Image (cartoon, rainbow, N blue to C red; front, side, top):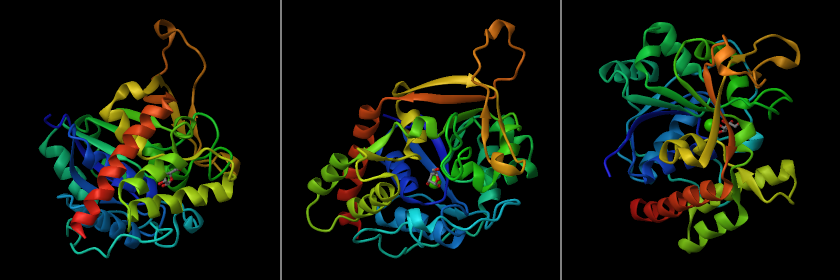
Length: 325
Ligand code: RIB
Ligand code: CA
C-alpha cells in the first residue's frame, strides 16, 4: 500500500506522543515527513531529545526539528507529575540516549518550507501546544490555504483536564490555538470528550509485554503513563486515556470516529475560561445556519478498534526496539 497521508507530526513527547509517532510509523498508509518538537509536557530541550530518542530507538528515518522554547504568552509549570521530569519517564527501562542530531533549521521554518513545497499535500498532526503552528501562520498567513489539514489532539467539547474548562495542549498556549482556530485552515479536532473514550487498558499493556519477554521499554514506558493516570483518577479505572494517537488512528481509519462540524473558538480571557475550546454544539439546521463551522469535532470513538490498532503498533515497536538497540 502506498502512503495516503504525508504528515508532519508536531509534538511534545510525551508518552502518548510516542504512541502516536509509533502508530504512524507502523502503518503503511502514513508517511512521516518530519517531526517537529515544541515546549509542552516538558521543556523543549527534553521534548526535542525525546523525539530524537524515539526516532533512533525504533529506527525511524525521519528528521527531527526543534521548535518554540516557550508559548507565545502563557508561562506555566511543566506537568512533571504526569510525564515525569524528562517528559518520557519509564516504570522500568527507558529509551536509550539519542544517537542522531536535531536538524539545524528551526521547526517553524521547516514547516513553512515543506508545506510550500507541496501545497495541499501535507497534513499537520498537532499533538502538543500549537505554538509552532501559530508562528508559521504568523510568518506566512497564506500557509492556511496550503496546509492540507491540521488534525490535532486538543481542547474538549465537554470537560477539561488541566482546569474544569481547559485541556492541556490548548491551555498551555491558548493565544496560539486562538490564532490557528481563526486562520481558516481546515481543522479536525480530537478533544478530551473523544479521547476519554480511547483507553490503553491493562490487557493491552500486558499484550505488549507478553509479545516481547525480557526487557521491554515500550511496555515499561506505557506502564509509567497508565500508572500515573490510575494514581490520579483511581486504580479502579479500566484503562488510561491515550489522547494523541487518536489523530493518527483517524487518518488510518476514519470510521473509528464520528465527527460533527461546528463553530469553535478558543477563549483567552481571565478567570476560569482561559484555554477553553468553546464548541457551539447547539443543533442548527445547516440550511439556516450562517455561522462558520470551522472545526470538525470528534464526538464518538470505537474503543475496541482503537485499542487494537494502537496495541498492534506498540507490539510491533517493542519488537523493533530490540532489533535497533
Ligand atoms: O491533554 C492531553 C495532551 O496533553 C496530550 O497531548 C498529552 O501528551 C499532553 O501533551
Ligand atoms: Ca502531547
